[in-house]
Length: 543
Image (cartoon, rainbow, N blue to C red; front, top):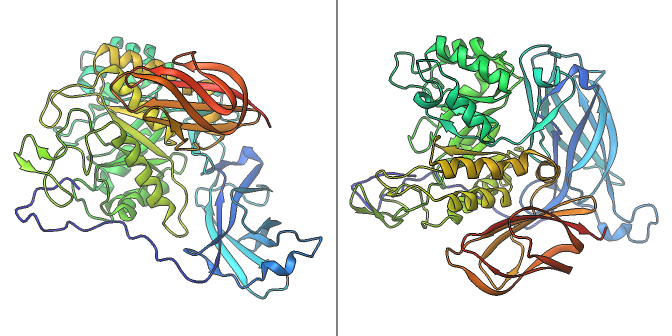
């Protein structure tokens, strides 16, 4: 956490408490709907069921696996599961022990559409065992709409899918959000001009968070102005991440603003707490706001951004469906606070980027931290992560604005570490940064880039020889996408090899960057890289 304390030995606390491994093997069964919401028009839903062996979470697993080795019907034992809601069986199936992300389809016909979520429970049994395994979740089946928008999260891969006027409220289309926090004075000027908002959309951005004016009595927006601008955003299909940062701890303000805007066709999500950990807001503040928002508007996700590297993650993150990180590492002094003239360490000082080392990889490290924390919360669901990237400078901790290649590198590091959306503090940046980040973002807003990012999760940390490179892979059918980000500011010479997770046949397409890469078997090779160079390639693989 970014704190200043007179006692350098005081630990601020709040560090994530990892669960203690158990000596005995456990069976950890989890249940989650494939999507955060369904509409009555969807007809069919899916559950994600995991039945993994663990020494961390789960229930006792006294089943003798060796007893099945000679059983031709059970090369691997299975869990027989029944999923019910309010006394009605939705589906029964068998799930192999050790299975992850097992999809089980079911009909939505037994669940009448309503605004309150259904409570869902799973009961599982093993052959020749009296042990009962249980899991639970919630399921939204909402009335269909012919106005406003509905936005669902894919709980398997983290992508967003939208239904609104753009597709005549029929089916769903994917949206990879790439857009900034917008300076309201720039994109929503009081003299009503669409010039800057149009330029923003032309640069390739598809969503925006217009930062509210905390100096106004209602700490929101000039309502007459935002109606006009939002009407234009509807025409552009430019999505709004509606910012409640000054309202989220006030139930009346939340209610008033949600009732006013929840039926806009380009409402993407609600954004509540802006760095609640850094401001040390009450630990339950984000969850209180979250619960109210879900009652007022279950059609849209709730998001928030965390500032600290490790400070009461469980509490603050409980108030969001989507968790943003905002490590700003460019040009900082990671050990000495420029504005405060004090040292920085894990318990003392503020250097502008909590527990950072002052490298672009601070962004990907922070994403890894958040994803690891979430994975170590028993019974809690996967949550997508987004990056808030630094595109500002020339102030306090940050003496310069990041260059375009630095921003593009942080974008690629974010993609490589499994983000499902990218945003920036704050728009406008320099023209080169605006244009460059919009251009790279388009790669993941359209096919085939979005197919990989929304149809699989990143295989992170590919082995690299010859250079300091962050590389990830996504596999989809007979294709594999590779994301590459050099971590060196200096040009690198010599042969560089990336070990692939599967055998590749050829380079199918270069989506971004150099075309000098060649492939043979499970190795991707090139000669030399420029400083901070990035690349995105699609390979044909041997299925």
